[in-house]
Length: 195
Image (cartoon, rainbow, N blue to C red):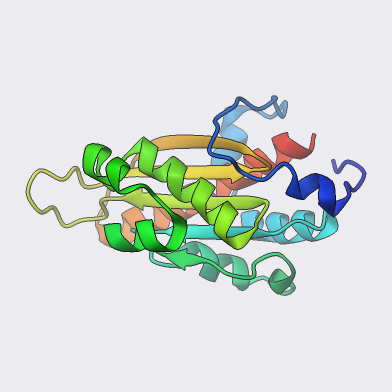
């Protein structure tokens, strides 16, 4: 259910600030979110964000642009997605979306803190209302990396949530699962944020 449109100036004043706050409930059972496929999520985001005159961006590491590609497969997506970022190395995370070097040194690129800063930084740089971030180890393992460990960040209208995920399978399976879960998380946050 959509709420009446807010003025764009109201939205801009509520942009992502890096603060984490809880969101209200949607009334949907947790299993509902796991049944949403990537295409349904993208269609929902394009339709809803367009109706609300909101925009989105993505800051991707291990998914390498898969979220942006999925969203832009929907006709009309140019109304909501004007730019997105592939920040595959630490330097790109810092330069492109402002992840602090101290965060990368202390917590590493694959961490809850980095995912939160990626999401907030993407929203700030792109002046977007919704920003999705993904950082993780898709495999194969080098050293002590935990293959399948992925942190997904989502920043919507100033609220940030980060989810730690553990996906099974090969590199392609982990990347696909991370993309799908990130889009489900975005849909859930948008539904909660607009309810």
